[in-house]
Amino acid sequence: MATRGGMVKKTPVKEYENVRKNGLQAIVLKEKDELIEVKATDNTKDIFLVTKKGQCIRFHETDVRTTGRVSMGVIGMNLDEDDEVVAMQLDRQGEYLLIVSENGYGKRTLTSEFHVQNRGGKGLKCYKIMDKTGCVIGAKAVNDGNEIMMITNEGIVIRTGCDDISLLKRITSGVKLMDIKAEEGIK
Image (cartoon, rainbow, N blue to C red):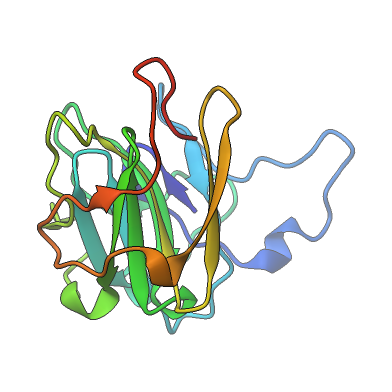
């Protein structure tokens, strides 16, 4: 599990086997924090956390100790005050990290460009934020042949093959993937 505030948590699936009608508590969250992604893992993967300010950290899953359901987890990424985690991906999900910004720009970068670090660091720059691009809104691990769909806040959808998105280095802004009106933004 990963939260906007940079916390990560690993809990055995068997702890969620007997779900009651009113549910089970899966994680304890700090005030103003929220759960953003949950992935099934097997203790052999690397975790990628990507922030809205264009930082990315890659660390071994084994760096996260196993905790029970009613716990907060551990710090996955140390964030600046105005930053937040927007995506968590696993290295085995794809060969490329696709990063998209709020003004419709994006790029693919080889996951091999991100070296493994210790959990809890600041990470590496993965996207060059500029006025024309806006902040990062999402990241997905993709392969050749995959397709993505981008949806604006106004409900406009486009479908794009990942092969058609430029393969660029880590510290770049990307190219225009979708025309966005000033009042729209991408989901």
